[in-house]
Image (tube, helix red, strand yellow):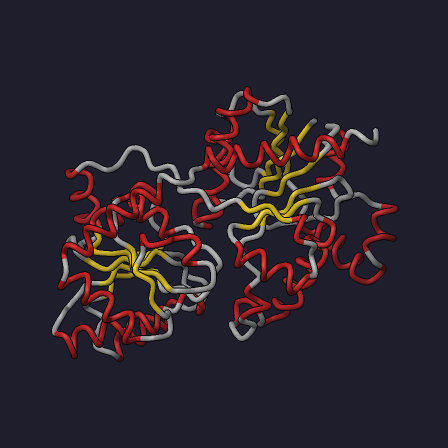
Length: 398
């Protein structure tokens, strides 16, 4: 069977989506000789500087292409007016056209993205938080809720299989979109590949570069409202005012419109000298920042799974994380789970780790064990099993 893999051209600045795509492709390249299937990667080549990493996967056929965004927007606008069915009868989406030309039997969308396509496909879903928490502006303002709902309704309804990371994700999707349970396949989010680990000298150089000292609280998260930076600042203030603990807080991530609000509050709370806004940092610096941290404090309000705690586990950084639905399935007993909206719980978790070094060391050990439990290689083996399963169905038509 010939399997197509669609990459949307994520850049490093996009965070976890880029890391996930790269790790899965590298592992697929290494394992592809263990399967009878052929693989074609359809890569939206938006940035030529990323081409070296993609094209190095010599045993995967790579087809770079660029969609004409204006034409794509026009396609979607017309489709919403006259229906996708009528439009598809006279005009094919560029991806479908290329996939048919390659004789693709099954398409895999590694990240949650979709174009009108009538080739069987596998959807990979990370969250549907617009349904669960529609009050956040990033999933509701400027028509975002309608666009997301339109996307998921089409994307999920036609998918041959839906990959979700845990039972919480499966239950949410099944409830809101009436998807039969047998169409789900559970594959946990893999621990990212981290090699090599920074040396002591490299770590010190990174800390010097950003003018910070080791032992800080670390939160790598783009500046969206759902990332819950404000309650983290209030916890930092409580640690200082109530417990006389003056932690530095290092914030890493691209600005999605909320950074100025967080900076203003840091000044208002008298924390501006404790909070470091580093913006986007290269991956090698990110790994070093995990290594130098007292703890990752990942207080996002979205689930059912998140990537940074897995990176922290692999780097030997203890994890405090929000107890969102799915967190216990994903992180097990390797993380200190707290209610993300509880300033007291966040502050008390940090205090407990500070007061109890044995607890902190125990979390580091458990985290390393959890990091080794499910890697990109394991994820790809799961994918190969799904491809084998669908092959018996696909052989029924030409």
